[in-house]
Image 1 (cartoon, helix red, strand yellow):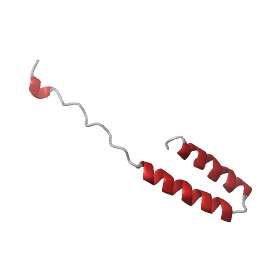
Image 2 (image 1 turned 30 degrees about the vertical axis):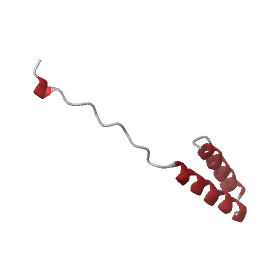
Image 3 (image 1 turned 120 degrees about the vertical axis):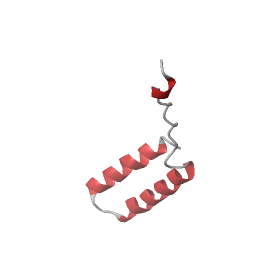
Length: 56
């Protein structure tokens, strides 16, 4: 087999967000949740907040 035709393994993916980023996003969502009165938006904010918590 010709080694020139074998492509190298792709580089390992790097994290897009740091742990500090998740804390900042959660704080921003918590602040926004306090300011919104739309029940549907509040439910979406709460769901996202809890999903972000899984990465803490």
